[in-house]
Image (tube, rainbow, N blue to C red; front, side, top):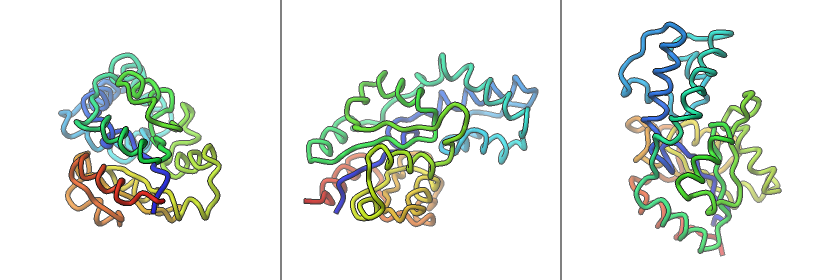
Length: 222
């Protein structure tokens, strides 16, 4: 059924909560806001950074620009490596690539950081395409990132709908897939709230990396 797999990064390939949440804490303190416990900042994992600062702290305009800059100040040096691939991820990627899939990363994180993280954890070479947002926020929404993946893959609309599937842990990933008429896999081992992925309309929901691997291998197009 499928030949192309697009993977989210945070909460799908790697457990990135420590680096993201500590960097958000740092940014909030720098702009003079109270910094809650790390658990309360997991809402920042998944959506574009400016969107999260606006929705959760009403930080907008110039203050939002400053908050993003402070976040990146810490994240670019330390935070991106406070991270760890989920158990079994490398084996899963190897298995689905060996089965003939074309693999891509489609992340709302800046592409430079995505590449650094994948290389640091020896995951980069599994992917045919690695796409993230840009530092200026011109490709900040999940839909924009997915569209860029398809541009680099040179996939027309028909092939996208028939052969591509999106894998992610939040409703942003599922909604991004639905925007293009794609099927999707929601992974519950990431940062989704209870029933978030089902309510978002994920085509499939899996609880473990092993289940994800089995599903993709079972659904591989001839």
